[in-house]
Amino acid sequence: MASTSYNDTDLNSQDVSETSYLLDDNDNVQKSWLERLRRPHLLWMIPFSITLSIIMTSIEAPIIHFISDLACKEFKEQHKNLSNDDDCNLREIRILASNYVMWYATLSHIAVTLSIGYLSTLSDYFGRKFIFRLSTFGIILGIINIIIVAHYWRIVGIKMLYVGSIIQGLLGGVIAINTACHAYLSDCTSSENRSVAFGLMHASAFCGMAIGPTLGGLIVKVTGSILSVFYIAIGALIIFLFVVSFIVPESVSSNIRELNYSTSPPTSFSHIFSPLTILTRLPVEIGDSDRNRNRSWRGKNTIYILAVIYFIYRISQAAQNEIINLYTKYKFDWTSLENGYFLSLQAFTRFIALIVLLPLLRLIRSRYQSSYARSLDIWTMRGGLIMEIIGFILFAIAAKPFWFYFACVINSLATITSPAMRSLFTTYVLPTQAGQILGAISVIESVGSILSPLWMNKLYNQGVNYGIEEIVFWANAGIFMASLALGSLIL
Image (cartoon, rainbow, N blue to C red; front, side, top):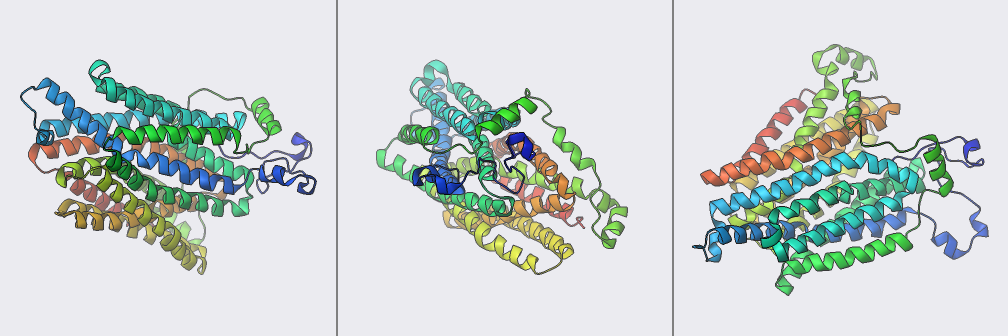
């Protein structure tokens, strides 16, 4: 969904180069204040991002608790001798709930992986608002499906939840909306200001993520019903959909959309893994030291090693919160409110890491030459991997909620790992290949998101069988140790 550059003659002599806006830039002096207000601007995406983050994270923990409660009800229906609420802590019920959560997440990730590339191209032909509307409608359908299952699960079965998960994924979900947000910002900002715009959007998203989980938990506590948060979320999303449809301006002008369609019409779902071909190329040489580096085995395989590290990072991150919600529900008897506190703390810590810690490291980097800048990215990555290891070890040994919250802070600070690795990826390719390598990263993320709930939930189930549920945290600490070892090979 990246913005496309055209020659001036293609669009009636309009300047649509990479360093300019992709909009009709008529003289603003001739426009009224209302017309100027209605122009696309990065400020439209800040409340947009905050609002959507609050809505989506408010239902994150309740969904896990809802599925767990349904699994308990289903098991009791099949075993009439169980009646006490404490029976929900039985090993068989915990494994059943874990399996439902695993397939709910996995099928959604598979559906998104199949559709995201196609939907991304459609936004160039039909506009960014088309994706906003389509994906928001898909989220609404997914939540409505949850409510239907809640009332009629004895008739339709709990596995009916998978239908809503797949529909939401095929229509893009939050991932497609996030991608469209980045494209919207690219359309209405210059290339010099684009990174700042992305940073503001990410910061606003984390603000919403710090509010949403706690808000969702409070709604459940005050109303006494876990379904109440889903009804409120539907109402909020309908309002959100109305604002997106009739108030937020479109960022891609009609003449550019027509030109996109005439020069490169949309294709079908295909070539999902084609971006990975960039990984087969040798790292670029920047100086004499790089020429010596590229002669070694480690130098020649730097991009492959980075890809493996990023894949390990992703297969740990994608299903992490689902496992934590399941684990703490039975370990500490946490409700949606306590899980909301945890997720809010996690988002707030990541927000601080991104707006304070990472910019501070970038400021230090800017004072040195590019070769040292790359070295700083390498050490930032290694530092983040070390914090991942410490965080998961603390998760595993935490006997009280306080230590689990402390582990959350350490683990969340490791969010600096991802931008450092992204920066390294772009350092080892030509500037003209930056888009290709970022596309490869997206594929790695998609595959990791699919595999993450599969292996983590299965391992958690085995831990429940043998009374060592924390084994999933030890395993994550182990794979990050392997990542750190691989990270030591990066030159």
